[in-house]
Image 1: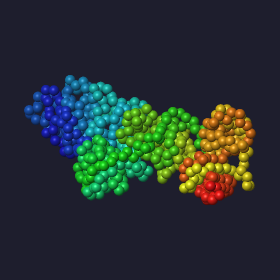
Image 2: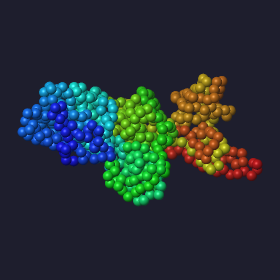
Image 3: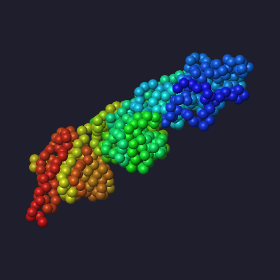
Length: 561
């Protein structure tokens, strides 16, 4: 990483100092290169100072001034000769001030370097003026010059409060499979500026972005190393290995292609090979199946039925009946590095830039911007609401930053290999009788049924059916207070008493379950499963704090033929 003056050219007529590779952009450090051709600002200065101290240059204007070991200025109209020259320097800033001789550029290249610890092969990325700056640096901590003032105009970025700020930049580390991190700094003062970035393996982010099924391998694929397509150069970090499936994260540099050879490397720069080679046979996107998880931004009011009433939130995550473990991985994927364009737009911006539901106001969950996962429980970031989930394994923070934990949601679950085709009824009993007059109809519309009393949220599923005393059923999608909503078919004209079974369904699978019921106290229920050809199953039991799971005894009735 020593400065090599042979790679630079001084043009005494144009008053420029140009890196010989800058025009073509070759020999830049990159995710697949190294820092061989990058030199320190102090060495750059000492080379120029030595050159212009020679007798032959005594009649040439002096080009550079040192203010400190890390702060320099062009003098007397001298400047870089190429737009890429600064990318070959590190360790200090250099300014091209207006009024220095004939110079009118008034530009500033500040030095930025990261400190911290990241997982092996992490490539940091920079957002400046709400756009990604194509990286020219290698993976790991960076030490680069950044153009922050260009011919008199500051390049601005919104700071942590959302205010456009001179010379501001954001640095992110977001590689799927790891915890994320990001930080902001202003480089307007020039000089050398640190920024902290730390990542680690994420125990809740297990799937991998995609997996490659490989043919017979020579050697062993090692977690933490890198698999690279020998033809396209696409390279991903190995997250786990299951048989012939190699799960990869943070794939960069191209497309992994079936029939191409692939090789294991111990570093992302592809400088040190591991011991495994193979041919790619299949490439599968692991999280592609999670795209039914959607996010909708905008102020909403929602009631978690935990006694706190309706509270405000900023974004609703429709979980598509998925468990929180899968929802979490999709939200991580949605905000990883490379999530750009319409497919990965989050709150009208690229997903890779998303920080919170109200940027500049809410505290940011840097490791996972929508919220974290502990075991199977999702802890939402401020303002995040979840709905349509498989199980209520979550704790939320409303828009006022107040924790909202769900009540004890439980279900009725019936399971049997021969369950399909049976009628299942589970409902509350008193003594030996089903309670059929829990409610009385007060009024109906084409899509609602209003009762004369409030609905008991501790005995009524969030969605299900109401059953009239004459055994007519109407489905509902929700309820509030004393009214069932989303009722079908049209209940117009109905009157009289009704009740709400915990489960009433004609089974079409080996397992059937109710919607969530908010548990408060145990109560007696009857479980009935019937189908012609089987003896009836009628067993009284209880709905408890663990809900109710049962497997009916379905005995063939030899007389029912």
